Length: 331
Image 1 (cartoon, rainbow, N blue to C red):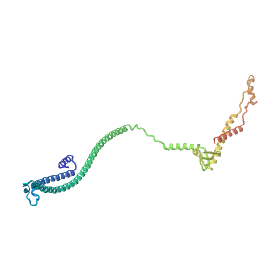
Image 2 (image 1 turned 30 degrees about the vertical axis):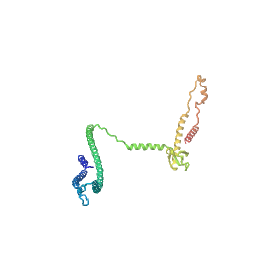
Image 3 (image 1 turned 90 degrees about the vertical axis):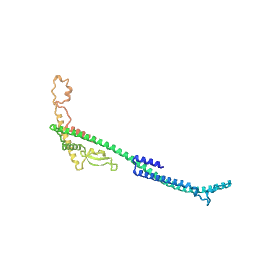
């Protein structure tokens, strides 16, 4: 960058409030270039002064340069010209060599400075990106702060509203405490007793079995067992085990005895009922004018007026056969 470009760049950095280190770096570079410009001006004055006496510095091997230009013949003038030209060209070549060397050194130094400047540019861009990101973060933080403050105000307003509502409810409760509804406590124990009673009834209603075993110890898909009431062997699936109440072989006879007692009571009740039905039925005497219409009825009754009925023993046998037959069918 030229001196003027650096001055413009420094002005931009100052106006945008960039890093002070970058501004100082640019300022130092401007000072260096100004010194270089000043040195060049001084060198130009020296060069101009030296150029004025350039001819005097040339070595013509002891010949006065003025004498070289005093020629009376064309051949002599051409020879003088060629000689002076050769001396000047040699002097200029030496000067150019020095200038080229200095230019090369200056270019190398300038390349180093340019690299440093490029690195500074990259650093400046990185810093600029950091600054821009920081500004965005600050703006986002400000927005979040404002939103949080707004939410806090709304929450405080809602809390105040709820506190007012709660105070109103307290007043209503204080006023209506006399007519407050009483809470009825639930009798958990009674409910548990009812549940246990229902479960007990359900368990007692299940058919009682004993000697439970697998029909096939390998497949284990069906059970075999004996009904405690009748000692009858039954077969059922393993998923149906919950339908039965399993007891030990020692407990089974008590269920068998209870079942027989129940059957005996049922037989007695049925016998009493049958005896009531078997009481003789007295048939009123027929009048002579009813003889023709009641002939068939008189033929079916004996002279004592009793209707023929089956014996009690036969009725009990038939009932017992029907009961045990239905039990076997159900099993």
